[in-house]
Image: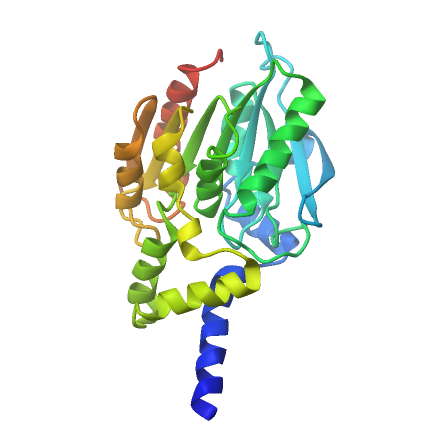
Length: 298
């Protein structure tokens, strides 16, 4: 009896690593990002921006923030919007370092907290399964607010990148997408991390997946960005640090190979997980500008 209870507890805790990840408060995350000089705090505070909420189809609110570019930068034939998706355990403030890049290119930048993160409502994290539909809700708001002539670029980091890619499987209105250190599928990622960090046997993974399904309604095999990538016509730029050991660099290489056309890949030397823009900001900005410029007017 004790062994059974122990095993159930272990499986529950393992499923919690995904469903209820550890997170800092929003204020602590903001202070950490600003303190590490990843973005210009003074410029952010002076920017023309406003906050609002959207109602998810799953019964919680999505906390959003729209930052407007300098009017001198926003002089294209149509309105450009960059929608930024943060990673696991982070919040929308972790996207400010990317927002600066898009603001310079004349984009309106929309950041939001994914479910169970930041100032959005609490719901079990699903590594992109439900999050892709929340992203669609955000895209709906953009078209409803600014009209059908807008151009949207989605950008995601880690889990946010997986969300961006899986969203392409349910919505073809995005002009192009940028996936920074995305995982190609959750099962392969979990196998890697279980072996690398927890030293647990891989036969537990299907059982934990079953527990996850009972708790949250999705299986690990349902999280497969590479399936969406192989089918979508939307252009994608893959970015990955060459020494990323949390989400293996090979995952972006596999996805790049599976994309039929309108694709690019940028592998950043000496960059660990989610550190590509920090390690080589100049190169990052150049690659993003060149790629996005192929599909819309900058």
